[in-house]
Image (cartoon, rainbow, N blue to C red; front, side):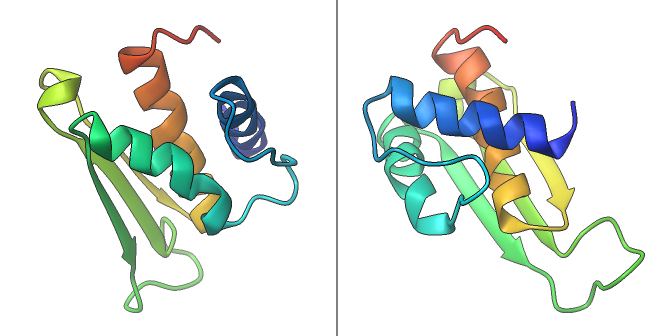
Length: 103
């Protein structure tokens, strides 16, 4: 799935959970925080990395990982060019496993 689709689905998840409305083309990290906090409260471990040693031509300078007992051994990881891409990916995959959201 391409990053624009993940961003759009992540925005829909936020709306479905009655969190701050977001536009898929204006996602900023603050807008993800309510969803990330919900994930954390449910026992998820969320890691974000800004990698200054990576640059153009690498897999992406932002890494996001979600894991934890709540995912029953599953984990999702992505290297992405934007933080929005990275967060959208882990939120969507978490939502499919934990909240039963179907795409």
